[in-house]
Length: 425
Ligand SMILES: [Zn+2]
Image (cartoon, rainbow, N blue to C red; front, side, top):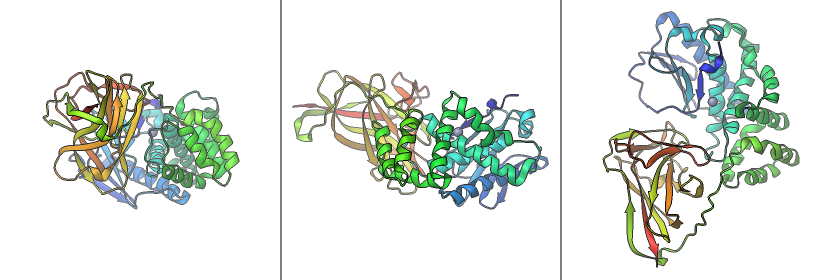
């Protein structure tokens, strides 16, 4: 059976308190597992905790930033897809439809040992690199694949087949075997993994976390990522080697943002005249509360009836949660083809805590085309972010998507996102 049946993905809907379905908990070192698996299969829960701890210990050795406690949820639920995912900070979620899916991959089609190591790979990268609009699937999934496969080799060397209660040889998911596939593979994940592997062969895997940190600190501009990363690399110790690596790797690791052909401009507030005009499609009723962690975006399409209109404010209905942070979230202005015109970076502290409310986010008066999108990306995580709301009645103007990727209609309701425009004198 193919191992592709398992969905490895980076994001999961958030929750903070122990899930209602999780009657059982198991703790092992830095890992807490909440689950509803019966006593007869508890050995699998113990193995999951041990693998997560093993992978995290390797990550710490290499200098990555790991949480002091992981929360792993294992949910047996016949109505869900088999799915392994992470919020990218300290939570990993695994859902299975029946306990046969805990068996060795040959019987279950599910590669859990590799999958857990892969999720720790995501956490290594996402805890350090925050704005990721410039990173391709190859950069994110490729890194998780590279790291996961690398740890599988170490795990197999240390614990062999015995790590999993249904003992099996999982070493074919290790880097040694994967490297051969990576070289000839055409898919983004394998190509990305190959490029990260080449980086690690230049700086060593211990050189990677520092590199991620310097990229994060440099603040890579999504419109100019290839050059921005190159600038960071040229200052590294092995600068010339790294720049050479990058010239080829960037074709896989960078998600090129196609800039809109629309020529925008910003003007001073005093250049504006007339009453501010509020554009909205929602019915104002915050029926649906949603948290999508990470870099997913909620977008609304707007239209103005004349040229020379300037965006001055974006109103978003939401509820801030979690810790204080000096990070930013993002408002994208996009044209009618969802091509980016500009991006406003908003400090999190501008979003007030307290009950859900309309927050007014001021932007420099920015010329908009007749048809445009506003896309809000909170980069929410388990312990910081904003819950979004929709009105529960679907219209034709709400979408989900990320600049540079496909945008899809959002069918649960209209996002509570509004825009204010004014005309120029
Ligand atoms: Zn993944």
